[in-house]
Length: 194
Image (cartoon, rainbow, N blue to C red; front, side, top):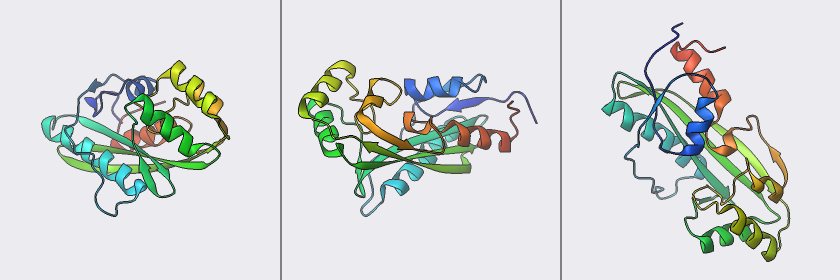
């Protein structure tokens, strides 16, 4: 086991950066140049896994000396992917569609080195949204403005009040980077972690 090797997070997401910092190892960040358009017939789970691997590979080709972590999350409502809403109106519409429903969140993580994806994992988190009135949705969106979050909420913030329950193996997965799986991939690659 080695205590140091160059580690790069293939993401400029502040959420993923903050999560990876929890592992206590230095790392750099890089923006992956990856087309995130779903392929025809691609399931949300397949999309999340493919994008995590593609992001890790893309940055790894630019940084062949580094071990690169790629991650992606896709919200799944009745088999249809929900992305980052981007606008106020789209966020309200997503939350309205999810109110009173169970939504699956697929979070993929991959580890690449020298342009080769060495390992990957896919987490499934089930979120049970409570029934939400239009006024509750509006108050939430105005308060937190979660336009850059898959599903249109921040579970690590006020968004937790939108749920009846969360079923997960890894509570960090819903924020955007499943740390249990990430730590396992890094240990298997030879990085010493506690």
